[in-house]
Length: 421
Image 1: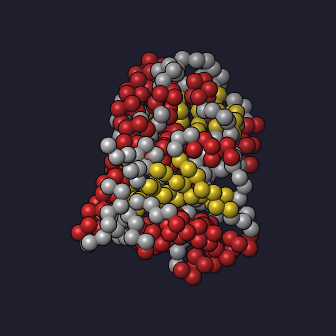
Image 2 (image 1 turned 180 degrees about the vertical axis):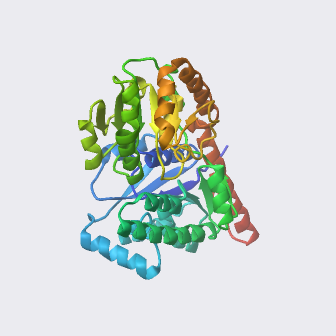
Image 3 (image 1 turned 90 degrees about the vertical axis):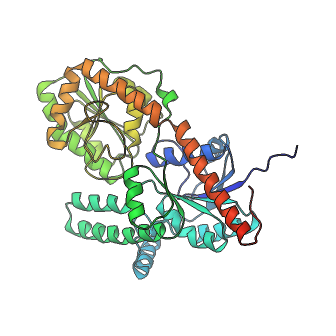
């Protein structure tokens, strides 16, 4: 029997998906880890400083990182990128900011010297490399973690500074044009929810598949369902340098948490997430509030909390923090925006409350632990059945194989050699 030929997959992302402390890192890592079970996976990433620990962590899961040295960002360099984006009529935010000539040159070399059977473009900014990929006649899958233009629109709505609001609205419109271009390019699209898939189809995408964000359920299986610990503790999770997360954390601390403390003076609030801004750090001076910032593991905080609060009014995609709380057996109170993309039934697996009524919803769960435990149990079942990374990984592998084989069949019809079928 001849040995099995393992097809080659070349991926690209704007940063190394390690450590696993952001939603973007978690999705990129777990999708690529799954793809590595059927493909020889290479991941090209720009790096200003070497990260041997991160590269080794990916290698252990079958992901061979190819770091491309790039210079540090400077004010002059970024001003040049902004100007270049404006000349092209493209967005700098979430797109042209990641236009690195070193990356494009390395990408073209890699396509020529070790031709892959499939390309995986991670995030919308990786569409910058689509033209070179298409010229090489290599099929591609574009993993859109979010509707990025919607994120900027919502950030513009929350901006207090008129100049910032004007800039973000303009960037949102320019980014929407990029999304439309990507959807009409013929590239296979991965969306994180059916709602986002519908949006991309409306923009002209013909090949859209849903591969939701997920959670490693086994990693949280040892935690109890529901919480009765005292003092009652509210948890907020999220990258605290990211504008929508920081804004939500500040609103929670300054407007929602004080209402909870009026009824439960012993209540605590923990804000956990990497790189907290100065505005978030000062919240730790308020009574009952702890700003943990970057932590090596969120498990101890999930175990200590009684409820997860998600008072988001902007942002996009599917909140992995909610899925982690589901898997950890922790009740969740979220705005409708915060829970977008998750097939959880309000009142059964999650409590939906907008900012004006969120304090009351939190209090009800803190004062009715049995109700919270029942909701957490239902949410835990949902996470295991629909959002475990193992199952989502199988979905991603199936989509990748389908796209690769379809290209091979088309190549045969055109009289060319099919790749790695």
